[in-house]
Image (tube, rainbow, N blue to C red; front, side, top):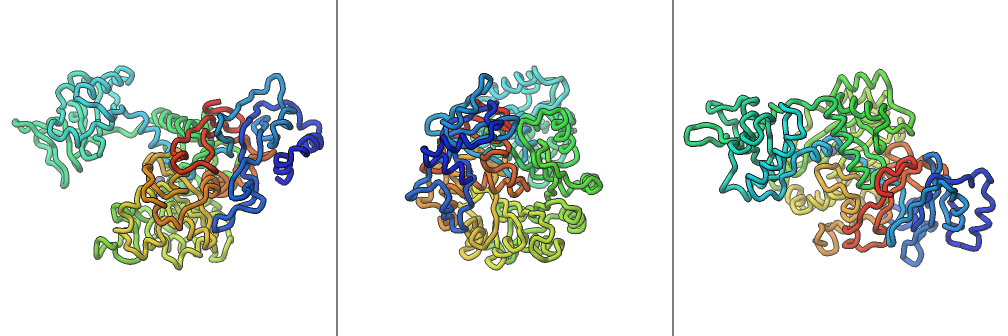
Length: 575
Ligand SMILES: [Zn+2]
């Protein structure tokens, strides 16, 4: 990358540099991108975040290191000055200019998503903000006109808190929508509202007993009114048939299109089961995947593991769908006290969380030995320790023995003595910056003042020699990258609280935050030699942002948006 930096930082050399290019490389480009470019092709920052001396960082300020990118046949053919890029402009070259104040960066990667769930949430009838029962029913009736008779309609977002004194019933909903079973979840997920047909299909009658921790709301005659509270919601939920393969494919496509619009060129799907893998493979075969998918097989689906064990991991990294990873669960979540801790919860004596019943060490070890990357969900300090023990025992016990870049998903709470093990074993901590911000209000209550030091400890992990990769774990949280970057850089909520950031010693620099969604993700997927940076020969996977994450204030970051998304030279969003 020495050439690029020289070409840009020393304008006088630009012409000479361009002239030195072999003649055939100046054939017209398909696409020219002009604007302020951060190639990320300079060396890594140190573990404390100090930029490399070769980084475009002068007197404490970042500046772009190129002005133009030329793309041909899905690959980058040039990165450098705008003047030199003119050589690539032909009659059929399309040009995209980044908006003023915006930047061109390597294509963003979200390394832990649930795209099917995102698609499902986008399909639901949106009832957020509806003021009256009639308005909610109108929206469901409008959807019913586009859905084949007899198919379930799901909705979400009516406010069971605000409506607590005047819950709707099934009458109007059943009159207006008689031919589709309807299932409408409340905004806070403690009530569900259904119509007559849904209750019929679920077999819920006057004589159905309410399950423990649930309530079937009934009228004066003892008949169900249409509202199920808390655990009783399951009575309706279990009547909803699993999606068909066609529905799954539509759901996946909807989720991936939303992710393309959010600037992502690649997502890592964190645990696909047999049906979901079938949908992914169908879209890949049809050529309709809008962005690249790096799939993790769901370890709880043993039939799926058996099939892939026979087949072996994918090794063609340039396919739109690559499957070479397995996702397993070791424990639960911290908020619900399901995370497995070495000592009792600080706010619940006698409780240390649980191991996940679906973690089968033997089955997973087989996958590891067959060359699959293993990605283990571990939240508590005990779960993280035991996950590392598992990896150490099954990879021969010495560093880099298999080179499979095993991952711990979340790596939320780590004991101090386990921090250096990540680096020593070559394990990647796959973390969600937004989780720190969303959990900060109660995490210390669960863990107490000393264990909190090893929680959401990005900087401590880097200092101890560990690798990171960042993601959103959508759809549980806002997956827009500026929210993730803001969380990583500021460790503050959207209102800038707390001042200075929560446990600010663990903050990331802007460069590290951007790398968490680009170059570090490339490494995690074994692609650091073909993507992650903007340089000739690399994939033409590029994101154009409206705000410069290297120089924006935290508040300005939150106002950022995605201008364009380019995958393998194709503009999949904006342009
Ligand atoms: Zn997840």
